[in-house]
Image (tube, one colour):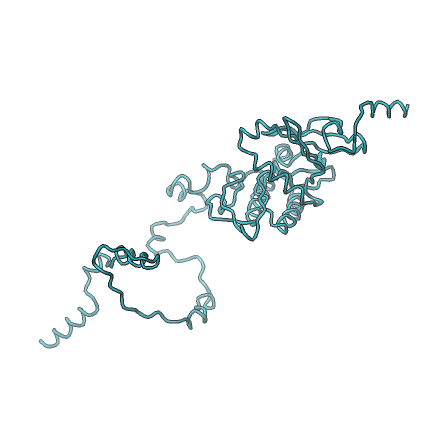
Length: 337
């Protein structure tokens, strides 16, 4: 019986000393499907070890302009290994498909479980968040930002540990590029720095994890969509939010509404270092030539532009009010009478 099974197992003439390829694996049940391809459980024919095989259709990848993302994911996965990350074990390709052979995390993703349970007890959420925090700490130590932390990319194993997966928009920073400006990720979980393209680093992952934690606890996003963010429908809608119930906006704008809390005297002190800072002295403005000749240096051109465009200004209401000098002069003149 054992010989028969062995014969069945190796009925193909497979060269396991060659580069890895699809013939080295038995394909088993499908466990996931994405934009570029599918994820299937496979068993290595020689070792019997099970893996998750993620395969990406080349044509779709090219049409979606995702070549750089896939290559980046492949390179990053090669250089990371952590107990709470879906680690890469093999990578290969054929004419039509790219293959990633990864750790088999078979408990489903958090999005699936969230749909089943609506929310989770705080102790359970704390466990999941701690798991992902560990994996993020590891990635950040390698200067890698995941950039797409969301329930779909957090997988559970059969012991209920949470694993970070899907690195196709991850980014590795370097001394030459300490920041990135591209807007990448899933909008509802994006940090403000990503949305505004102000330049960001690995810290944006912590914002996303906070959003995930809130969603797991309460079964809803802090922000369900870009069109439901507080403030996106204008100021009137913003003011009507229940959080501001009872607030007199007019008095607040006129600064007639006392603050609900006042700073301690210590908080109002000016920093001693700022007090002792150098004073600013007035300097004589330099006259520029009245002809049309342009300054030669960049600094000179900038100064000329400031001279021409940074004009003196007095608010109109100040012109209607008597100055302190005028008041004093009037009192003196009245005294002379």
